[in-house]
Length: 268
Ligand SMILES: *[C@@H]1O[C@H](CO)[C@@H](O)[C@H](O)[C@H]1NC(C)=O
Ligand SMILES: *[C@@H]1O[C@H](CO)[C@@H](O)[C@H](O)[C@H]1NC(C)=O
Ligand SMILES: *[C@@H]1O[C@H](CO)[C@@H](O)[C@H](O)[C@H]1NC(C)=O
Ligand SMILES: *[C@@H]1O[C@H](CO)[C@@H](O)[C@H](O)[C@H]1NC(C)=O
Image (cartoon, rainbow, N blue to C red; front, side, top):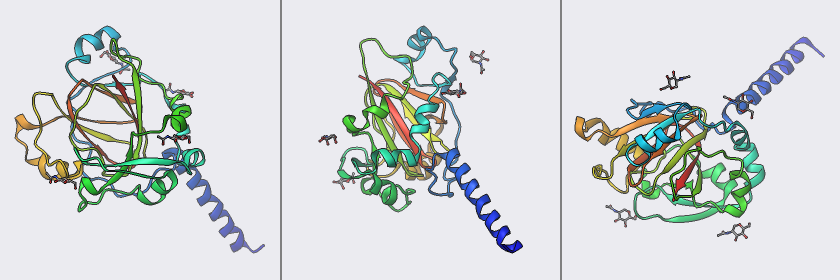
């Protein structure tokens, strides 16, 4: 074999090894290198670590305000099971139910999971309305996804008299649910190259101004910068290893700063 052939072979092997390494780092979910978008933004939600006790959680947060808790669970095993390769192997041929990303009129569409990942899981375009953007969040078939969810370690602090229900999703860069509210719960980001999910929250008695059919991305870029100080949201960007707790009936909108795999735990 000539020297140049050997050089080409070595270069190819080197590239393959790098690709392999990259897949391990991002779970294979990276779809686009475009990001920046709106950046991480400030965090004015209180951030606690695993020294937060259950009684402090109940007294200070459970019924009154959001909190980010860092390092309270270790979901590295669940994360591994959520790599693109693994999820496609296990669920590629199953149907998943997609919803439009607007506040009120939820249109639902069923597609095979593989088709969603290959064709629909794209960065949000600025021109598209939330009501025309389909994505996979919740509506999970627990017969098919239950065995995976059993590997998820939920945040340990529940609320008295409630039980837990999971909602699992995968969404493209720039997507996110616009403002809405429901019962209390947690949200955790499992994967993404820059695995940030930016949250905007308002208490139940301070409904934000937003157009119900527009995307969170357009709200973040057009409305957010011109809000007066008193109309600014409570906000934070969460990373893997952090969970965000939202109390009952708090308004919230989310923005995925890159492709992200996430799971919410509803306490109902
Ligand atoms: C965890 O939080 C406590 C109380 O807020 C703080 O004193 C401590 O330094 C924190 N530990 C780490 C590792 O950040
Ligand atoms: C999480 O658990 C895995 C084993 O499942 C372990 O290798 C890893 O070090 C743990 N990470 C932390 C931050 O404790
Ligand atoms: C959930 O999945 C099971 C097993 O594939 C299937 O039989 C059932 O019809 C599905 N349920 C719904 C509501 O789609
Ligand atoms: C939002 O979109 C839905 C469905 O396309 C439409 O029926 C509704 O009128 C729109 N709402 C507003 C406020 O534009």
